[in-house]
Image 1: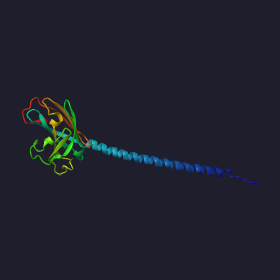
Image 2: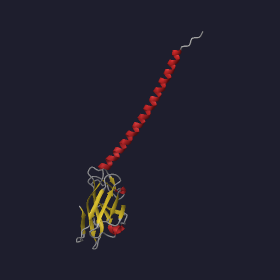
Image 3: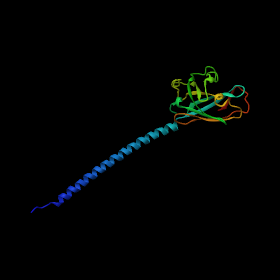
Length: 210
């Protein structure tokens, strides 16, 4: 007569189930850890991008216009970075500008550049080379020489002027014309342009926004 040990069979079955549960738990834990790492990296990247967008940006300090006798033919926009801002590359910075009838998008023409205001505010650059889609750049203050024609990067305490040919953009700006716009960097806060031209043009250089 043969005797079978049923308890041994049950024990082996329980062991197999226990091992299977351990394997499933290990795989599940691995998936959860991978998901957590992925979410952590994504959250970190999103946080860094958000910090850049909040802490960096541009600020328009002044806008001046040139009166050619009949209309404002040029606009000079004084530009700085916001306090504590990261570096801003003007190569990837565009101007969105509108009057009451037209809206323009202007990008930097790096060939229309000056490292100083050698010929006066509106006499340093040749504005006739500027079109309805380009603006020029004049460096007023750049202590660390970070802003050049090939590498137009501005940072803390830098001051530059963006020159716009408003005749090319709007056929000149007449009196009582409302102009709005933004200077939009690659990331961060945009500089705001908002002014209305005066009711009469008396001086050659006219302060439009301060």
